[in-house]
Length: 161
Image (tube, rainbow, N blue to C red):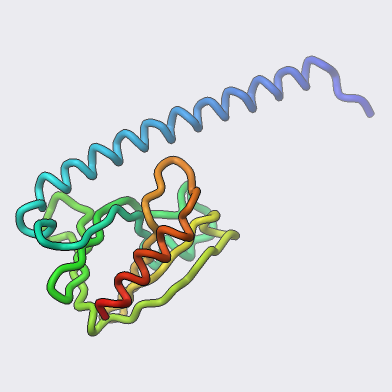
């Protein structure tokens, strides 16, 4: 059975257009995320970021992390701050929505890469009071060096615990 050439052309055009839309979506997402980081840094600089160690991360709730069908492996982006035996996860402009963990009372777990559901990103988990939040380093548009940079963050947190 032979496929008509016009159907092949239509299929190729559709695939190219879908790829273009995906690139536009991801580019817009990257710009929005950078603006969100800037807002978080401006808002929390004095109270949390000054005299602390912090990094940009992506996060996933436990529910989202184990979900089989999803557009992205993370819920969003934020800042992970280490200050005074606390891991403070800043992801919202509403201060009461952010998470604070006592490092000494938390369980840190290296998860690594879970290709089936979460792409080629490396992850670690902070568990506190039964709540698990998964983190991966912010690597920009691609996942290049995710393993190396996420492992570096994880090892740094382990030193504090």
